[in-house]
Image 1 (cartoon, rainbow, N blue to C red):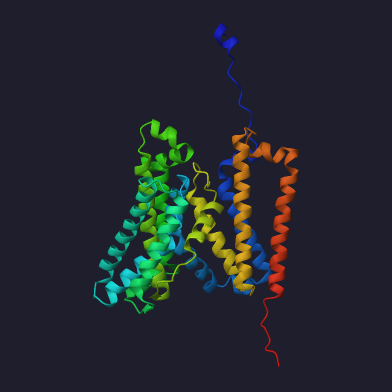
Image 2 (cartoon, rainbow, N blue to C red):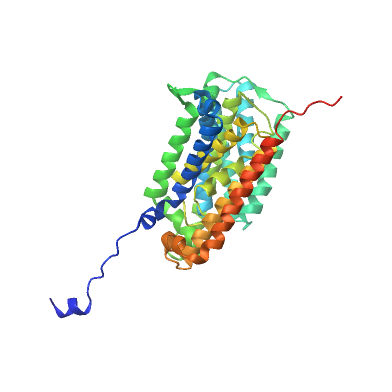
Length: 380
């Protein structure tokens, strides 16, 4: 053995524990565990209604509508951005497509391409407002949401446009592969493309870098503004695609459609583990988040719980998920040794008790909602 080897011995790696091995997959394991919990609960409460083929198909159709937008929103949020205009972008794009088909006789494929291009243009406008006019993402996209929704109302003039060609309804509710709905195929394809872009291209690596440290990224030669615009263009295009899918699903569209797209998509992405503080993304986690929210809402409907209590449950789940991921990331930044050290630290017991309390409150609210969800009998 040489002197250098004696003075600088090779460090021996400690064996990894199960918690350490699972740490990179927390963003995916979290929502999947909640999906499993919902499945087990419904298997006891309403197995016949919840697990019948038509209901599973409905859950997939509901989830598919948000898959393209969740993919694009993952890029936007990873870059420390946010887009609150996607509902209006979807509605306006679909309204334009509907008018092109119904009043001007455009073929459905041509009208769809124009709608997607319009969505990309609105995403470009959002990106320019944020990067060139230096308007914060939250304010800029909220203002543009009002603009796009206003245009949709002006163009539609209160009309409900319905009965579109078969191609449009096929996109929204068709069956592509025997029992797999066409929207699910479209959604999974967009997610697969997003996963490849995030993990295997310069744009994906720059997205992570910009979210981690925009100033450092700019100093290394990354055009931060240009890549942020790219993300918003992608977001606008996917919102337009979702608008087309919604129009095909309902076989109708109006200017007030898709009012809660933004909150649902942001919730799914954040629940899936993408950090609101940037720098951490998970396309697979976003897919799990979309499925989780669709399963949860469908379960509440199956249990005949009123819509208002569904909103309460969704809000509590979102708050709990964001708080959990924020806490885990803070412990990481503080150098606490990762998930395994966090779970082994006795000083964190208060936080765990708080989490259990929140879950208990959610269950209590659901029970109260179920108690008040019966039919109201007319008086007299």
